[in-house]
Image (cartoon, rainbow, N blue to C red; front, top):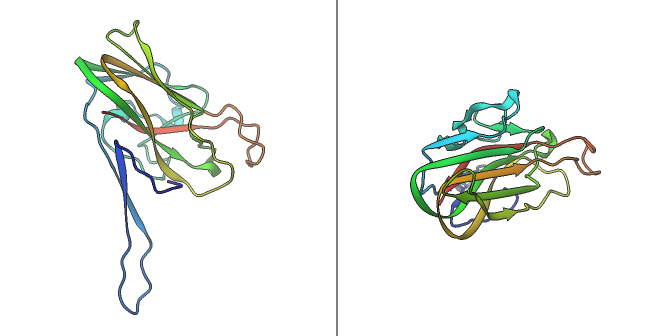
Length: 192
C-alpha cells in the first residue's frame, strides 16, 4: 500500500526484527480483512481476461488472498471488460460496506479502477446504487502494492449485491504505456 491506512474492514500490520550489532530485517507486512457475510454464490456478469481468470467468480469469495504476483492464479484480471459480479445471499442480509481487494502494479499496467459501483436489492432486476467510489489514480511510477477499496454506504438489507469496477481506459501521459488500456486485478470481495 502506498500509505499506512486502515479501515473498519481491514488493517495492516508491519513488523521488523532488531538485534544489537546486527542490521535490522526488512519490513514484513500482513493484511487482515474482515468478512462478516459470505455470499452463497457469485456470478461473473462479464468474464475476466483468459490469461487471468483464476477460478472464475469463485475467486472473489474463496478467502484466498493474492500476493504481488499477478500471475499466481489467485487473481482475476480485467482489461477489455469491467469486473462485473453478482453476489447472492440465501436470505436478506443487512450490509453497510464492501471492500474490493485489489492489486496495483503500475509497471505492469495494473491500476486502481477508475470507478467502483456497488448495487444492492432483493432481486437481480431491482438493484439500486448503494455507493460509487472513484479511487485516486497514481501520478508516478512506484512499486506494486495491495489495496483494499472500501465502499461504505447507509445500511441496507439486500439479497443481491452487484459490484462493477472499471479499468483505466487510457493510461496517463507519464506512464510508459501511455495511451494503452490499463488492467484491474481483484482477488476478493469482502462484505460487512
